[in-house]
Amino acid sequence: MTTAAVIGLGTMGPGIVATLARAGVAVCAYDTDAAQHARAAAGFDLAAKVLDSLAVATQPGGSIRIADTLAGAVAGADLVIENVPEKLELKIEVFRAIEALVRPDCVLASDTSGIPITRIQEGLANPTRVIGMHWSNPPHIIPMIEVVAGKRTAPEIVTWMVDLVRRIGHLPVVIKRDVPGFVENRVLYSVMRECIDLVEQGVIDPEDLDTCVSWGIGYKLAVVGPMALLDMAGLDIYQAVGSYLNKELCDRDDVAGYVTDRTAAGKLGMKSGAGIFDYTPERIAELRDWRARKLVAVRQALQSR
Image (cartoon, rainbow, N blue to C red; front, side, top):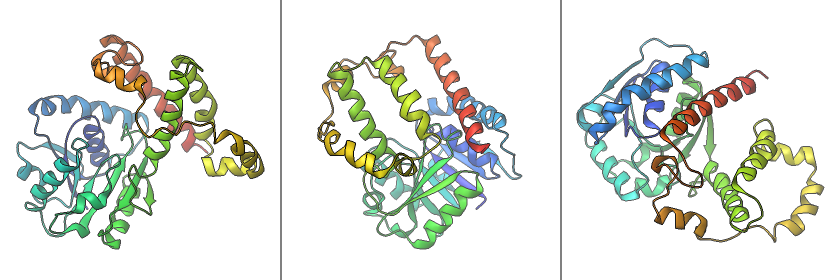
């Protein structure tokens, strides 16, 4: 695999492009929004600087180009990564357009956060080459990628994708069943649901909740995964605590008013200047820089073992 196209240059796109290019892939990017093209160069440069700080070696053959059209982006590609907004109908529409423009052996990957790949495959002429390639944000720093086969994905495409993920220096995780949310987001959203419920019920303030999670379970889980942690703590302990605590955990199947009320009021988080917390443009820039530096340091520490 020497050439790839990344379709969509929003939050994840520039980091994916920079990571692939650093691994020796000639990457062509495209977005229907011309404003994203204008911002992309800064995103590529920022991601490249982070990769430098991680001492990620530059492999020969890598390059970055932005195309003016979808056809120009995917022409001759060995791999196309779809990175458009999380709307099933839009993704199917994009894939139908792409498959009419690429070679029969071009692999089509979706970076969806949780839409089942099987659903995306529906209506496509050649669904056997369609696979999930779920990067974690920021994609140039967090090295885990979920590889997800739909019901009609050919087994050799899964093997091909696992090899590619390893080649670019990331860690492939094969999801054995195409469930909504895959694994990373199912775990994350179960944690988020409990956290939001505890804050909404007045058990804890948002700032203290973040401290509790980051310096408590988050600190441990960065080093020891949940299944290994069960063995370390003892399954008998989990059984004893779970026998009464599981009954108390939040199990609502809708989204809490703590979130929906803010969303309705336009308080979307950093992107709008206010969400759970308030932000100035300067504070947003500081937080993004702080996050990148901290994540780089954590990755370096984890890789040192």
